[in-house]
Length: 317
Image 1 (tube, rainbow, N blue to C red):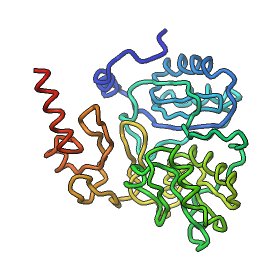
Image 2: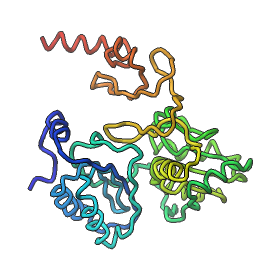
Image 3: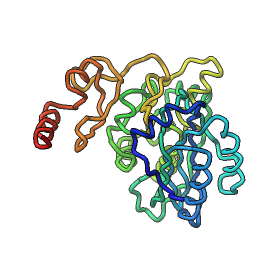
């Protein structure tokens, strides 16, 4: 069998839209030593493909990072198979806050040097020496302490549409930029309790260990990330201190956590959290653009990109 998708995206969308069953969007990760990630990748792909599981999965010697769309009737088969592997036994699996059939349309599984690109080259760094995990309720209480600092371990395009109240949000586009910037920005705050959060917990896991490696003593991380936090707040009937949308790395691009719209359209400056990629493929920059501006600009991020696309169309003719 082919261990990769061979159908174009348009056909894949049609195929999912025609499915007579519901899909569940799930995610999980685990830092664990994988001896032969290529071999494991082939084994997982073969079985998950038979269940019509779609998603994006990264494997490395340091572990696994997976975001998946699983047919509802195969969820238990998927989990049972996963837990049979000693590497992944009882790994916490998070279900998306908002479920629909639009998260993934194909199965993509890649072996990479790391499951999250961090840019670290420090041989003395121990990623297993992580911060203290806090559940949603404890995280909320801890935020009320004046000696506490809440820090967003995500990229700027994620925090601009949703974040915890009064959080420090480093202005970076990648995780590899974030770690050194966070250390620099927090250098004079080592006496404070540092609360870290991210989408599902995987970035905080490494970031908390890196802060401790750099002399921070009281480092905490939100267990299960924003996804688990939102579900716990809903289950307990508590008000969410995370406001806006939770950016997700799939076709949905975001999950609504609260009705607050904290972003601004990059074109006109009006309130919006509608995120799109620039229509010019050579640009493809992720921007916030309200529906009015998207219609006027044809979803281009600038006049320059719109003009460049017009030139390309003219050449094609």
